[in-house]
Image (tube, rainbow, N blue to C red):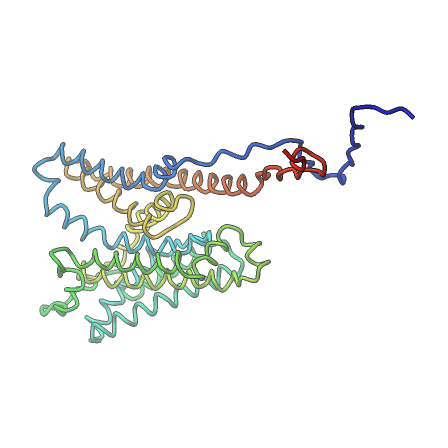
Length: 378
């Protein structure tokens, strides 16, 4: 027998075929995203809003940094903000409701029809219209989920039908109140102030807070985000994806009905085609909002910040004397930018989650063998 001072090397057992064998030694973990990058991604739009306010205030010192401009922004952008929040809810489950503009037009026309021509109390007319908006949303959800039709096509078809109903109700004309006008309590829904600020701004704030609580603090919101991120996984864990998707369309329709009430109180006239002007700004705000506060997923605070960016930009451009065609140009360009940034944020979020999940852990501490240095007495 021969003895050797060096220990015999141990033979490695091959792992099962097709599996990755971890290399020897510690594996460096993925570099975490720094706090600076997270702050820029989360609050970049908020900083952009402040920067735009500063630029327009220096450029237009007599007209932009005034209380009248603030009141105009809070009042005029309240309905687009409400509609953007309505568009945001189905996007949480990766669905799109293109019937928003048509539903807004029908809702405000129906309020005027019931109050002016049918003589209904304005409170009852508003409640019926808001409930009708929820019914339309349920119809959209059922068609999309149980009819298995893409949400773009389904809601575009239902929106065209809503536009047809609007034309049938108004007979292609406008609904104008009589000499007595509309009830003052009804118009005060939009024209009144609270704490020195327009009341519609508080509607937007209250709606955003409710949606934030539901989506970020309740189990229902977490389920909706799971459905939007991976519907197959949501089905496997027992989440009723179809039912929850119908819920999002119903909530969207409910908010659209409320926006129609505000639009009727603002316009004080029934215009069958006015709702289409709000469709593009609503989706711009909803998609651009998914890149702020919670980058990579739709959220209510980010949507409000995105609408604020659009409002400040449009107000400043308008005060600088830009032509009318700059508004659709601004909305179209911002929509393309919003879609690109939203897709990039979502991909980056998924990549970061996959990297953190797949990153191998470091090797466990090697236990000392009997007779080793740790067991020897000093």
